Length: 312
Image (cartoon, rainbow, N blue to C red):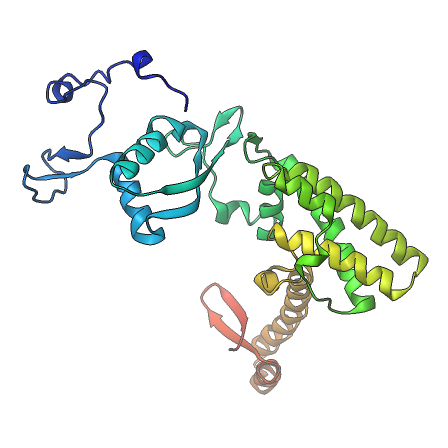
């Protein structure tokens, strides 16, 4: 963090400072307080300090040395600096690289539980698809704040859909393509190698998508289109948003459109079945139910009406 020890101020914890060799020290192990969990030690019952918890978890799951440690910019000092100090003192190499991210903000304030302005992912995912939400969150540089708004989220979703549209149209022409590291666009790689400069990388991606749309419009030869599609999908794969990846199989735009269309036709059948039951034509009602079941669609009569789902 570049902090100088002579510039540091005492924590202001008079009770704790009286038990420290130096008022600027931090506690590896804290003495127990009423109502807190504690464990016995040669120095009395206590619990881990804030910083040692993270070093212990990192060592337990990642070992004495690992590549990347992430965290918010607000944790650089004192938390991460203290993690390094105590881990080095224990003989561990600890993290080779540190990535400190800025925040998603709303009305200029950092989203946090304490401020009560945080968003629940499951709620946001009702407005856009998860893959579109990931695209939106990844669009800003990780060290820059991202001001959240519904309008920006929707604009980002539309931008991703244009890319997705190219991928699906091109794949319909040339079929599946093999994604290999050699397909990475050099300008895209350069941008990502510059401190994960995603905004610059996305500019490259949009440019290649534009070239691909031109190839589709001109009905160019398959080899050129394959190269373009492979490049685009490889870049999307690096960002974790390749729409044809099995990861997003249940999240595709086509899947949602098909579900909506299927729901329309099932609801029509349910309406006809309800009318048959009201007319006491139970044979016809059962025939509709059985016909849907043969198609893999199960009906459930509930107090709130008829529900349907796909049989597994």
